Image (tube, rainbow, N blue to C red):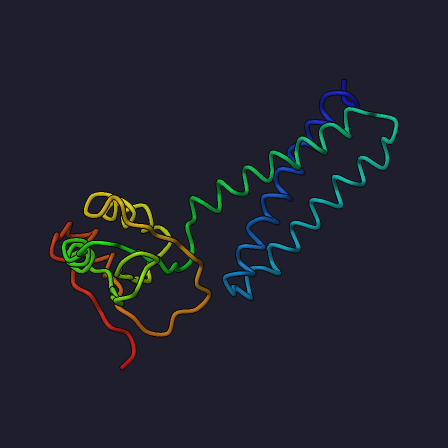
Length: 189
């Protein structure tokens, strides 16, 4: 019972834990979180050593191999879910429109997002490029605004490692008071 049920389950859950921690560690490394990443790395490797040592002691138990592989796959999935829920970091969203985007621009500004607008030449006509730096957890809201006010706009999203200055909404005050008239702050200058 232990060798073919309990031990494989322990290996399976150990792999979920260590791979999930590894996914988060990589995310924190890419975000420049120098203190948290090594801490997570310690526990990631500790759990991995425990799991692999059990496999090495039970080389003739094929259930351990299956549990190890299944735990790895599940750990990747769980790690991505956790990373998605944390939604840490800053993004730049680039919106390209072929028509006047005043309503979209004004709505983004009214919601407290800083925007930079550039007139440009597209393949066949003039376009407007709108840039905004947002917190990652705000992406869904910004995309909804784009789809509502300019559904045919092309947009792309990229991770930003560091932001020095900009206009960012005061989210805590707005959430606490449910104030529809959000203020923006300018960091720096």
